[in-house]
Amino acid sequence: MNPIIWIVFGGLVGWVATVLTGNDPQFGVIGNVLIGIVGAYLGGWISGQLFQGPPVSGFDIRSFVVALMGAVVLLFALSLF
Image 1 (tube, rainbow, N blue to C red):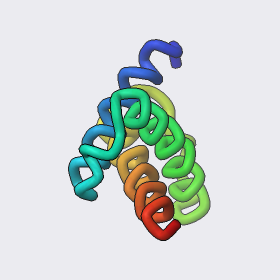
Image 2 (tube, rainbow, N blue to C red):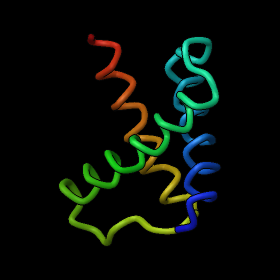
Image 3 (cartoon, one colour):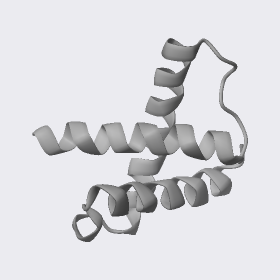
Image 4 (cartoon, rainbow, N blue to C red):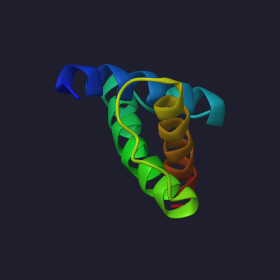
């Protein structure tokens, strides 16, 4: 995927994840992008381990849900520290 798409996708996923978990005021735009991108990698890894499905690629609803799941898991793990 294009790096610009990763930034936009990461920002959108990160923002939705922080709103869902109630952490929205704590992170800025850059934090949301980083959370979304790392969450996408984490969600892709979790999805691959649990479901043995094809890798997530592209910008579609399945990729969004997997990335959102990873971002929420990441935010939960960060809240433990």
